[in-house]
Amino acid sequence: MSSFKTLPLFSSGPHRFATLRQGHLVTPDFFNSGFGGGSTPQGLYDLTITVTGRLIAQTEPGLRALRDAITNQLEEVPTLGSLIDEHGHEYEDMNLVGYQEDPAIDRGRVRSVRYVATFMRT
Amino acid sequence: MLTLTPTSVTFATKPLSDIARIAIDRRAIKLTIEWSDLGRHATFADVPEQEVRVRIEQTPAPTDLKGPRPGDLGELIFLAAPNRGGVQRTRVTLLAVVTSIKHDLDPTGPGKRTLELIALSTNGTTDPVQVEEE
Image 1 (cartoon, each protein chain N blue to C red):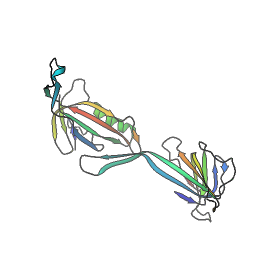
Image 2 (cartoon, each protein chain N blue to C red):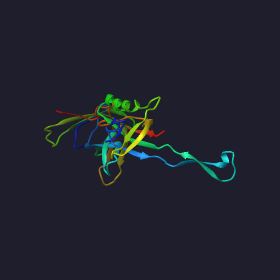
Image 3 (cartoon, one colour):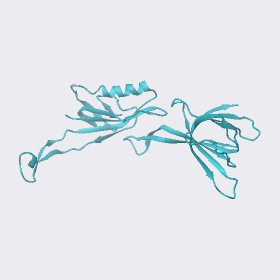
Image 4 (cartoon, rainbow over the protein chains, first blue to last red):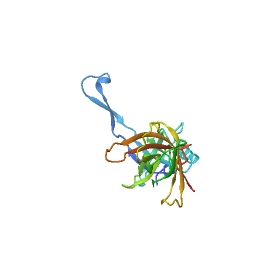
């Protein structure tokens, strides 16, 4: 089971982990008071992981509780924690930096909403 | 749901005559399907938006010029029975808006008029089609 800081934030529904771009931030020298077509690596991007999934509950308050559990991890002063995916792989020292839902809650057999949670190692 | 030879068919309190059959179709307008990181098969599906369409066939087609028109809103009521004896009749009631009226112009046949309607729920939660045993 996946978790963040040991909390099963996403276990109410299916979700998928994705690793965003890794590597160097490279800037053209021309725009850094230089000239020519060369470029300079400025350093590695922070590791960024997204979790895309669907929160699922039987009731509106239930869905709200699931959302609150995630957004409560959006902290003014971030504290780092371990993010663990469905296969047990651990990303250490991660910080929840963003959470976004689809515009509308889906109200069918159950209440559900699709989301993207973004974690960074800053 | 398909009802053959329904009786006492009214729309917006006006009787509809010579009804051969009424079909009530349902389909998903929005389908949500999700997959997990655990495998290839979907692990969640739901239909948060659906529609209920009704088709009414009249044979022969009525020749009056005052029938329902697209946009008309009304309650469609009819009695359905598994056989002509009318045993175990059910009353079907639904609020609906007319979306189209088509005529079959086959010169060798008696002519047919098909009304299409979309059923509406009163509050978004209640099923638009109410079925009561008579």
